[in-house]
Structure formats: C-alpha cells, structure tokens
Length: 139
Image (cartoon, rainbow, N blue to C red; front, side, top):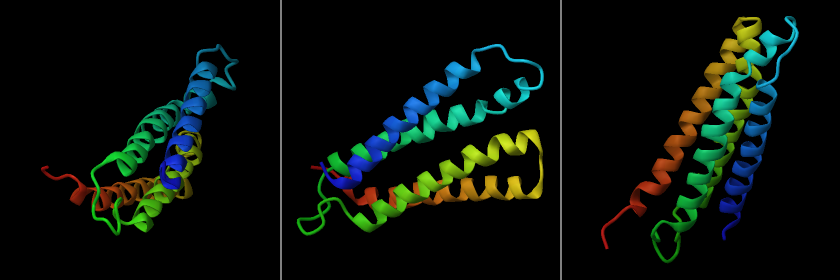
C-alpha cells in the first residue's frame, strides 16, 4: 500500500473516531450556558464524518486501486496526490475551528476562515479529480 494511501486511510479512521466521539458528546444534556457550544458543533460532526472519514477513505482507495496511469507513474502524480491530501486536511482543520466559532460569535475572521476552508477543500477535490481522471478508462 503506497504511503499516501496509508495517510489518507489512517487520517480517515482518526476522523471517524473524532466524529463518533463528538456525536456521543452531543447526545448529553447540558446546562444552558454550555448547550449553545455543543449545538454549534453539529456542522463539525458532519464535516468530520463526510469529509474527514468518507471522502478521505475514498481518495486513499482510489489512489491505490484505480487502474495504472502508466508504467513510469502508475498512480499519476504523487505530488498532486499529496497536495490533495494536505489541502483537504488543512481545509477540514480550519472548518473544525471556524464553524463553531462563527456560530457562537460571528465576525469577519471566522467568516474568512470558513471561506478559506471551503476553498482549500474545493482545491483538494480539483487536485484529486485532475490526478484520477485519466485513470478512469476502458479496458
């Protein structure tokens, strides 16, 4: 298994554990002063689950298992794969911080971080597609 695939898969498993832990915390009853903070974490749960776990697992498996691009570069551009990995995870990390903060105390900084996180994740998706597109071919 290539190193990039291992990083994607292990990161996805970490995000799964974090998402499920967060969801367990969200099922509790909290005092009025803490309840808004717990409620503000709902989008974080969703992003950890869908982007962190599902998307990263898919990216890792596709990088590893899709048909070879060529003999010299069987998985396409490894550099582009790493760019996708880092953009996805930086974007996810920014969102984990900015999403609840924006819900609790809206301001230009949190909004800018949210936009930056979305841009990073979008660029990660583009890098992934650019690296995988030519590997989808007929036999």
